[in-house]
Amino acid sequence: MFSCQKNDDDADQTIALDDIEVQIQNPLNFENVFPGEEVYFRGVVSTDKSSDLTNLKASWTSDKDGLIFEDNITEDGETSFTTSTLSKNIHHIKLNIFNEVDSSISDSIEIYNAIKLFPIEKTDHSSTLTWSSLKDPQFQSFKLYRSRYKSNILQGEPIFVTTNIEDTTFVDTTALLGEKHFYKVVLNRASQAPDKFESNIESIQTGKFIKKDYPILKIVTDTTRNYAYGIVNLQSIYDTNGTGYGLIFINLKNFSVENRILQNIRFSDLDIASSGNYLYLAARSNTVYKVNLNTKNLESTITLARSAHKIEVGNNGKLYYHVTPPTSGATVFRIYDLDNNINLPYRTTIPDADASFSHGDFEIDENNILYHGESNSSSSKLSKIGTTDNTFSLINQWDSNDYQSAKIVLNNNKLYWNQYLLDLDLNIQGTFQNNSGDINIQDVSPNGDTVLGWRNLFNSSDQSIIKEIPAIFNSGVFINNSQLLLYKIDDPLYQQYESTIYLYSFD
Image (cartoon, rainbow, N blue to C red; front, side):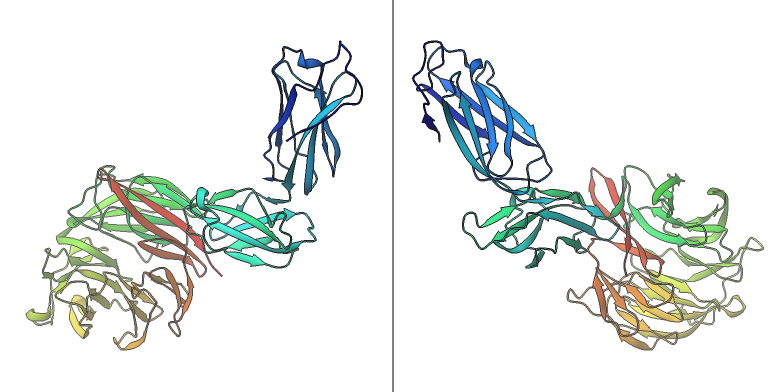
């Protein structure tokens, strides 16, 4: 739109304005711009006549800030500039074009420099959003929107609403970790002209995480050194990974993968000796690998009498292992004497019918008693197995009569097996539940208070849900009583798997 006004009769040497039009092309009419950001202004003067437009003068004004720019029109008939100093307000912007005798034509727009969302700050478990707005007398509310997609950011429900104009900060603790999210704030108004102001869009990839081009099967923590150690492998023995296997060293102080060794070996389990100086790794073979945790290098190997897929190191200098079972079948436990570097003969008081155990997981307590939980479609027993005098005995056994996940946790004289909390006599003390029905307990905090399950943290004492973890993960371990390492294996691309490791803190 434009208006034309002549102050006097045009002289022959002046440019007549009757055949000239002016249009503001940037910003658009009723556009939201953002306080403190550069705003690009552009106007175009056009005419059907052959005229030298450079004698025309452009004057840009705001009804709130006064004169904001002034210059002659270019040879191309344009006037443009940028500014970041507009005040927070509703601005009526006017572009006046003057000729030599100060006759003028003009165009005008209205823009809203009302609300600015600042760059997002994040921690390993939250994102803090802060914004600034004009003190609008028509203010009704702020609504904060979040979306995984920039194009439809306002289509969902707001994640935060406030009717307090001073409430301009929100801490988002529910955005999915490791994923990119887009945010926008809307100031809703009582007035219908306009009924709202929209902020700029800010985005962030939430959380603190590491992505690697290999799969991570299992992680154990070393709080003495502030490290964690992870097996690079896949759950299924029939799947392969194009980028190799091995052992990784995770520096927890700076949260980085510091090294990867033995990349040609598919490890199946690992355990730190009670001395804290050595890490032992099984590889579904007769060889166990001994890594020096001070040098972070392979120190030696051990040859077992049988192939091992699960191992635990007792506080008595013995390595206990479950012989690698066939695809559907059961095998016995065996012992290797680490102090004397010998395989101990197999001795048991368990009847042959009960002496073998199916696929699963086991833990060892301070008395070198084994607790084994089966994870097999045909067998789901939890067994307490004695090892006195290097002889296996079946102390107790409980049949859950239901398929269980291949993970058992021993913590503060309690056992955690899928959804069950049991004492060391295998008596059920509690059952964990959530809305999805999948619990799959992965770890328990050092003090025994907090339990990590599928997408949830639970209270150990009453099995209640403490909070939902905003992450997709396969497993995790506690670093301390308020911090976790979570990890997942992503879908493969041409037999090349990737994984993500999250560092996650909670109150």
